[in-house]
Image (cartoon, rainbow, N blue to C red):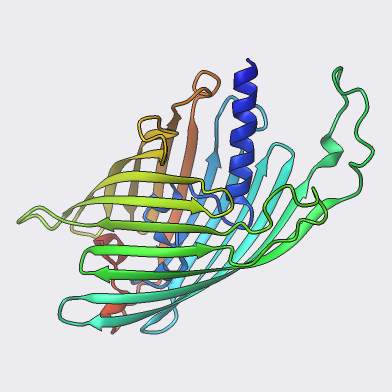
Length: 329
């Protein structure tokens, strides 16, 4: 039991570091919403794309992380796009709310070979709060620390920057998140990192079988590295899409997440599926926790609902996505 408690505490701290000043990345980006990963994807496609997510982590464990988020991005000219995202997150007695505003510009590197370069920038504002009013005395802790008082909350502002390279059906993005230090004066006096800089690489390839353009396969890899303590994790993903004549489609897939020093000891593994019908989108992802917590929870669940609206094609091919899901309605 002691080992389990220590493990929960470790994962809770790890999760809070990874979330603060940045939207938590689980499998939301696989719900045909690459904008979750990088601002460089804003404006790619022929429509206003809206995605709302509900995430419940480690179902069965009290006060486990719970998150709600919404994303929207659309093109504002032939070569540019903007996006906005917001989230509400709770993890035990911590509460976070955040808003992100993004801009992307898309360039043609080579028209004939379909090589494009996208540059993106995001401004983030985050409110982090500790619910000290929920702290209660216990048999082991009969008196609360008198130093724990007042409103333990702080607002922070930060920036993300990214670059995206596309070559026909191949894509590779690099993102640097939380470029400036955060304010930690109201909390622990510096025992947690003030700079939550982390790097993300997202790459994949979309291909179809010969003589069947209505089917797509998409293997992809998502890598995240935290500069403060050299932690890193990787997702290995695979998706299958099937389109009909009306542009509607369904997809199924799977994701495998692991720490990079523990490849054969995955953090999460699970299936996912989604459907777009008449501009309405729905997806579900289930991630089974494959570690010492597996006997205490039933996994992590992510539900996504969305809309694809206001179809309008650009005159520039640099806003065309690698998958038909970006522009077939």
